[in-house]
Image (cartoon, rainbow, N blue to C red; front, side):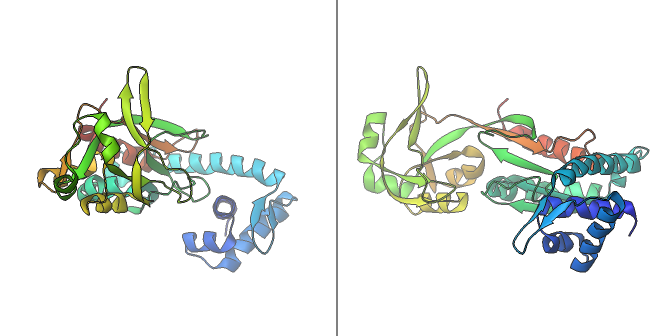
Length: 300
């Protein structure tokens, strides 16, 4: 391999903290990844990675070299596409992550048109409620719903999702329909926690000073959106969820909106990507397409 290829291998090993995982993602033998790193270390005269039986971690020199490698590889990627006149010329691997509900209901149905326009792209789409590590897991960009917290990533804010209070028709037939917030004392909710064992949130409602939480009875806590929706349809309690994913169930009369005057706070939707001087054209093109597809479903 040439030095540029060795640098690509080093970046992937550093991001995944694993020779075997890097080899799998690059479709190459593990021995070849080890050889590439050894050649780089011999050329540079320094150790780039600490290797143990359980973990691979960058040295201080390795961290500095990693940052320079990323800049150089991004520059090379940009050079390869800077004279292309049509988006159809885009090529290469594109690894993205987004919430399962948005992927299933909005992005995947429209994806054929994007891939038909860019047939040389190799798209890897992850859809999970787990918050992936964009850098360590090698993602080009991720779509996130909700607060971002502390992050070193660049955030492109797309808008917000309207949150609606829902219950199944079967649940309301058994327990009645709440008309006021005080009525909720006689009802139960389905709790959502991305990590089971953590304290799930209560029922959110607007006040004159923002939003507050109300504690309510519950018989089940789930950790993914599909289970959250299924538990509601089974009549296990009330939920608060984006209207974007449950519109069809509400239209078909399976779920009903309740307490429309007391919605939870809208959830921000953002595209995140690493802090790069030059964002590859294929990533920029995909993010622009996703933003356009989601625009009709988002509030400004």
